[in-house]
Image (cartoon, rainbow, N blue to C red; front, side, top):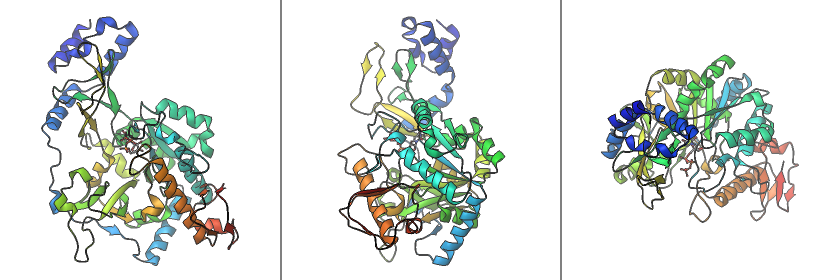
Length: 461
Ligand code: UTP
């Protein structure tokens, strides 16, 4: 028995972690020791204490105002100027992409990393294929190198690496796809604060949230790599949204024109209770208040014309200035830790595997948008959700955000693109456009003659 470790664990009432020590072989013992040693038990104890007390939000959402925003229909001149500036930045090679793909995708119930999900409605192409395809296509349009910094977690890292390598990075130069792995947090018993064991010789660990990206970018050398490559702006999006307007020149242009350090793409909420993060202005700072933290009273506030006062819903597409991320990475503990009660399977004191039916544990997570209040300048830019947002979250049969919903949205948008390009297509016809074929209606125009009629299901690739 490792007496020193036992003593350390006793200080924090966590000695149960060694309860099965004598049943483990040397390799398992070494693994357990290294897991325990990597955890700051003092911090976890404190986080549990704060989490169990139910205190999380220290601001009053009822005083929130809408954020400073570029709204749809604000003017064509402003839009084309933004596109021009964004296009210049892309052509100059000062834009890179951050794609976060470390989540466990537990709601979807897919046995592989979510990025491997075959979402293409006709092609069956995976999320990674479609999203990296958009980067490849943008690189070709602007004759530019656009590196992708792709975040995995211990849960998704190995399989993602193998899959991307086997797929030859979907046409990206391999040196421009930089995988980096986020950290983890242990989970604790919600009643006792004891760390949970996944097996007799392993702690239960889960990814530390998309906010883990900041520390992971710094730790992996990715921030340094960006600086060396002269990258100034980082286009951030999540692996579960195949409609994401990856590297949208207009969004990048607005970010640059406003000297913003942190820009959010947002959609106008349809209902007060929409399940998106609410982007608001509070105490002079832009912030996101999660839907679960927004009281009904604040969510229901209306303007004189009947529209929602807190209208801006985040779709998790952001642009960060690299200098801003570097500054934040240097300031320790800049991101708060959120707690959530969840069902976590564990090994109990008698060595039995337990699969609870009710939330039994507290999990910890960091959110990347908690960087927002630190930005010297932050703006939001509205986008039409029909062309930018189709998140894959839930398994078949759920009311929203299933693969079927996402595929319908993709095909709907692709039909709109075809019609804008002067092509005739009926709603009953299934269509899918590979981003490498066309990213915009303008690009389609050069490939398909006007007035063409699509009469059967078609995959444009
Ligand atoms: P979600 O919060 O929707 O989580 O992540 P999820 O893992 O996809 O699904 P559930 O909640 O387990 O069902 C939104 C995005 O953030 C990434 C995910 O990969 C997804 O792209 N993410 C989330 C991370 O990269 N790391 C995390 O720790 C959490």
